[in-house]
Image 1: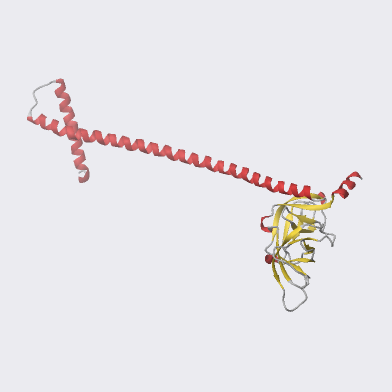
Image 2 (image 1 turned 90 degrees about the vertical axis):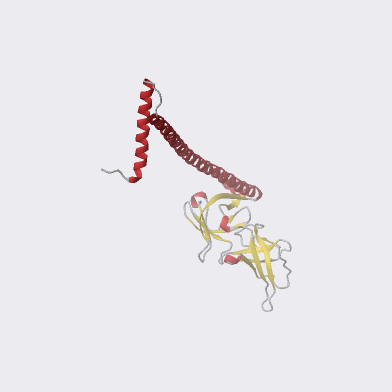
Length: 280
């Protein structure tokens, strides 16, 4: 069978090297004077042997580099896995740290207020529908009931409108069904704070004769009996006195960022009443 033409030079070279090595080996055992034919073989065999040696060295170098790259890839994969594990651990510590800061703010609020409060976690939210509400993980088994006010460290969140043993639904301050007796802290002007959904809130029934400025702080008046007096509601962001009507149009920006709520406090009783109930 004829060999492919592309392999013939390589085979011939290998045969020449083998013949050269045989002749050289024989000459070592029986040294004689170097003839023309042996000299030609010696001259031809040396470069070929050198080429083969270099080729084997190059092949060995390539193999070593391959082994090194395979090991480097394995090491790189291990380091990536370790890095991902460390990032998860750091993230857990960061979340714990941030939660601790939020809980410290709630604890400070608990100390400032003259009411017994129950802390709760936000476990659900529904702010895209017509009714703006959140769900918290406390209910009647924890002493909660309808219409109890819910607050955060920034201010009023809303009030409970539905409750079960372990879950309660809170109507947010910005819902259009939310109405709270309020007053402007600086000049004690009273009105009704009504939710305006994505626009925040509006302060209703403030006569045009009263002076209201942008930046004025609005707090709960305590008149309805649902919300204790003095709880932060928001700040005046816009005032308009139209030609028609008796009242001003006052827009209020709530202090609470409802999209980021994670923990809240529910006001249950005055501290004195709570201690009295415990004593009885």
